[in-house]
Image (cartoon, rainbow, N blue to C red):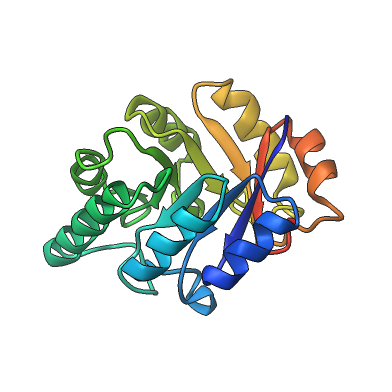
Length: 202
């Protein structure tokens, strides 16, 4: 069965998304900056008041995905909070230039035991995406949220299909960006994926 993951920017949107049929939530703040970590209270209430899995974005600020050692510490603390509050999982990503920042991702993953983990759209800035798919699968990350390296999932549908075929079940490829209730099922079928993400997915 397909999973419709609704990207939401606050608690109210999380409640509404579940009512509209979302199977999972990506909980964010500041969607105008593509999402930053929501507050303790937002995470707590969203987990308590919804009956679907809540994935929390772990991103201390907008802008690029290259982080200082202090920012890595902030993200580690936020992951601990998510675990304590009963979140289903977290959404992470970090780069060094156009590659995965392996050191940072490994440091974050040490805090993620028992959590589902998504690598977010920082993936689309990586140069060698096939090498990155292999590495993220090897690290034990569950899924990659991507628009296929293009402006949105529709434009990137051929790349998404190729990524999905290449990943071959080792890691899930989750299309996102400009996904709507109207195009979600077409994209799932075309790209041969089983989960899909968007703010208008339901």
